[in-house]
Length: 161
Image (cartoon, rainbow, N blue to C red):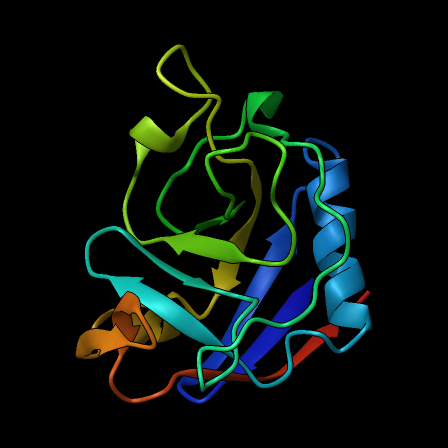
């Protein structure tokens, strides 16, 4: 289990280490390294998802480790409360950024339309915190859209196992 302590409360996450071993190990390593401390949820789209794990409050990007293989074909679905790796248009481009689905987002699953976004965990406690984050007012900042006007910070991330 992973606990993300945010400026809005704690989010507890169970990793899908059997079905998403690469993504889970990658996320766990970022947690162990203290990487997520002081990063922000920089993209919040109500009724869709909240994204974080790579930018600081001034919208500057943190240095990441190498990109990982996309595990979207693992059978896991982008359902409400699941975590998936964020990526660019390049299939195997995920690094540190992740998102939490606010609703079932089947169009993000692996399929013929698109390779999809690798689901690697789920929120086991703290969906109320996720929903609180999803409700913040957003705007444009540093060339990014859907940025919370009140910074939502990850102040700590730790492994319980």
